[in-house]
Image (cartoon, rainbow, N blue to C red; front, side):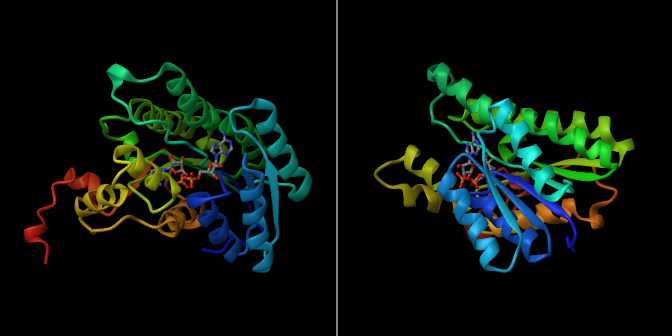
Length: 266
Ligand SMILES: NC(=O)c1ccc[n+]([C@@H]2O[C@H](COP(=O)([O-])OP(=O)(O)OC[C@H]3O[C@@H](n4cnc5c(N)ncnc54)[C@H](O)[C@@H]3O)[C@@H](O)[C@H]2O)c1
């Protein structure tokens, strides 16, 4: 995978999976535009890339705001003139509560970031890629976009929606030379999964983590870098025939429904 001469635009790149993707693209030669609403985190990611010899720019934006999204697209074009790879990644976990008790404002907040944010990214980046006649988009969904997860109704609904947006957009832009795919990470070792552990049991978050990991065939959380590798592959020419697809990166969790018999694991 070689991204020399390419420009990668990544939302939610201040932390976690987005930062790892930014580091991965930069290490393979891309100019990287870091987008986040957390200014300190976004500046830190861009600083790391520049320290490693890369060319990077941070643009502060809230992905739920149309003006901010239009601005990060314009700022990318002003700086680098093109967008080859777009990792439409910013997302939030929100609160844990059963559907029968779920807070309405929290539901709206999660849908706003995870669905409207992804839609606005597509809405304003796709015209650029269509005009270029090339480009690859990777939307961050989740295994929660494929199966239910009790206690996370809004998050699950939002990630199913990301897959719907991906499938729809892919068919619309394929003949223009643009590919659109989704990734479905399982539990990944970032701030987000530790936040979920703490919400489930504030007294013993690491106990929750141990149970989660015991139910993953590979026996551990994934790393942000392992997800970043998939994003780069899907944006690369190696994936030239892949569009409208969703790829699971979850250590085997979804395939087995968590039904790992540890006594059988050697
Ligand atoms: N960590 C996991 O286990 C996991 C699993 C499946 C999917 N995901 C998805 O991966 C993506 C990245 O999550 P992560 O684990 O790196 O979490 P994270 O919290 O470490 O990083 C998310 C980043 O998005 C930014 N962000 C949040 N809301 C934003 C907004 N409105 N505008 C701009 N930036 C915003 C945050 O500031 C942060 O830097 C999310 O879409 C998440 O749903 C994570």
